[in-house]
Length: 436
Image 1 (cartoon, rainbow, N blue to C red):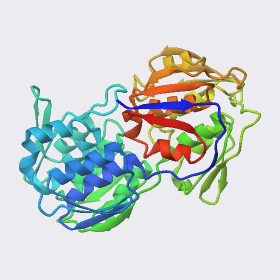
Image 2 (image 1 turned 180 degrees about the horizontal axis):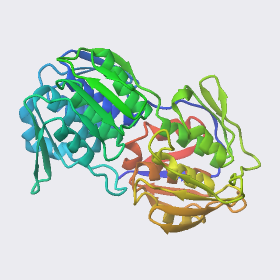
Image 3 (image 1 turned 135 degrees about the vertical axis):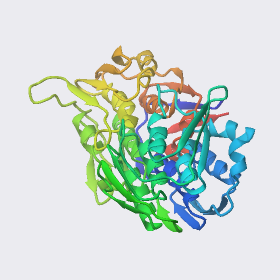
Image 4 (image 1 turned 90 degrees about the vertical axis):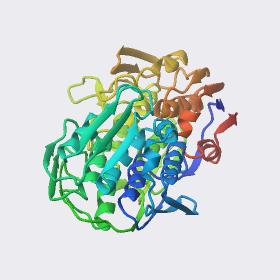
């Protein structure tokens, strides 16, 4: 188990460039299974979850060629379907939640797709019903082996249909779209997710020969085609990492420039940080955060009531940044209610922040009230363990702002979502050491 030692209380300064988007990568990489032709993808983040998926694709028979930093070419012209029923696949597949998205492409192109119950963050239930109900609507037969938690879907040829999703699941929508592009006839998906990363997937599939309309809306219409070809694709910067760096700058009173953020794909993120008092300036396609030497103040609502920040499907505020907002609020002037609607266990990490001296009332698994310190009572260094990716980065930001030396264990969770984070933080002045 790896550990970070962090000497907090230091101002940072400089430029930092966000990595490619983790959540986009997990969709885009699975889409290479839809064609026997070459697909070249750039700006792929070098992180644990993405590297696991690339290895899984390779084990499945996909030819993988690394062209350079963050650039790979994939060719799925000799897929080994027998691997799907091997003990190795059952073990590898359950270690990565993103592996669920290989099922749609495999089902569409080869008539069958299998997956063990995927793992991932322990942030509450993350059911798979939306995925498999979509496949069943397209005509697939579903089976589930309870003994080894193994899912399977099979179909000779998928048939287009109309479906209303029970939730606007991003991965569920992506999986169903990848299945529907090779189905016979027209598929309409209502209550579809419309995140920028899902839009990126649809645009890539259209370049490969798919016929998808309504991209960016919650109604996708897909005319099935017989085959898809190769393409080139560049991934967006990771909006969660961008939000993390905004929070880091505020908590450490640092002047930071976040480079090449793709402003038009950030949605509510800049505005939500502004609501907690952070100055977020647009400079071209960069974000500039000045040093908040006098702190920052949370806005109340027009009638004077306490600000509530909650998550919602896009274009609402992403749940992956609520933990960052919560940490930032601990040193603001004023109070805020953080309402995590989409996952029931994601706020349990606040006990670590309370140990550091933060004033937080955990109302229930979904809501926490934060009473800001206005930097009058700095967080205290402590020893803690990262429970998941997003809580891990939040605790890291808290440690970088705290007085003294903190220890964070289980940093493998942070490595799953953030590329070379200790090297990149040291480059802007952070005092952080990795201990294995």
